[in-house]
Amino acid sequence: MSLDDLRLTGTPNLTSIAEKGLWLMIQGVKLVKLETHVDDRGYLTEILRAGDEHFTKFGQVYLVGNATRGVIRAWHKHKELWDWFFISHGSAKFALRDDRPESPTHEEINTFILGERSPGVLVVPPGVYHGWMSLEDDTQLISTASEVYKRSNPDEVRVPPDSFGYEWEVKGR
Image (spheres, one colour):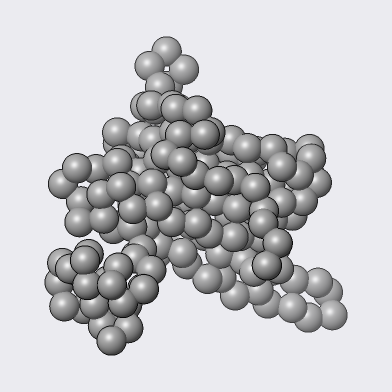
């Protein structure tokens, strides 16, 4: 039985998934692989379209750059805001933790690697803690949010990078 088979049968039995050694994607999280069109002029990658099934609404878009590899920006979650993350330059390790008590994947942690050599959009729903670490110097993240950031009353809860026992360092294999 594959993870896709389990997704098609409704709410997964988390114990059976763990016993089978399968990895469980946090409910509502999606990694959307993108296609890059290359020709003699260069390349073009479509990141996000208004009609995409994984897109809800537009609030704002911003560019975040980490000057050196190993910089960690974590953890925070939102009450209402959805995030769509895309690495336009370099590469990054993303970590997500489901903090929604009603979710069948409550407390599940997922890790994703995104970068210019493997383009994708990471979709993060409200209630999921998230953070990222640059894996290369001058990594750039394009972040699209469903809501406009309110400086006077931000929709965010922050906790330190060492929360949840997550290990950010890259380990040799």
